[in-house]
Every structure is written in C-alpha cells, then in structure tokens.
Image (cartoon, rainbow, N blue to C red; front, side, top):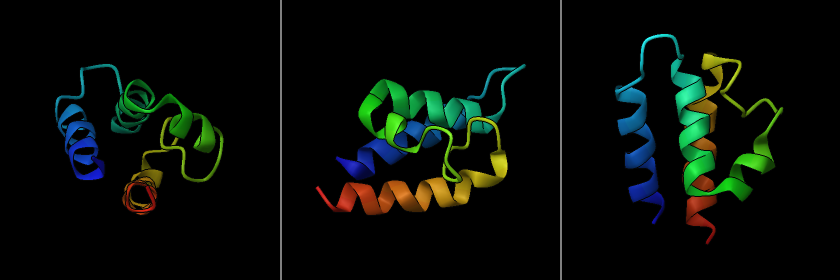
Length: 69
C-alpha cells in the first residue's frame, strides 16, 4: 500500500498545476489518500505544504510510516 501511495503522490506532484507548488500538491494528495496521516504532520517540519524543502523528509516519513503498518 505504501509503495502505491508514494507513486500516487509523486505522480500528482509531477502534474503540479500552474499556481501551486509541489509541496502543496504532495500534502493535498496525502490528505486525499490518508487524511489522518496528513493531520499527523500538519504544521510540523515534515509538512511540505508551506515548504517545498520539506519534501525529502516528507517522502522518508511516508516510507517509514507505510512500512510500520
């Protein structure tokens, strides 16, 4: 499941619409797929919505989180 979720999020980021940033798209995709996970990182250093530089840490967290299920 985590691998497929990662693919879906990365695919969404690859299609980032004009006017949005990759971090916004990644967070919104996570929220669509697993709202409780998005709520868990909202406003933290892992939240890429306001900071695209957080994307690598966000992806690492997602890999660990998915592996813990």
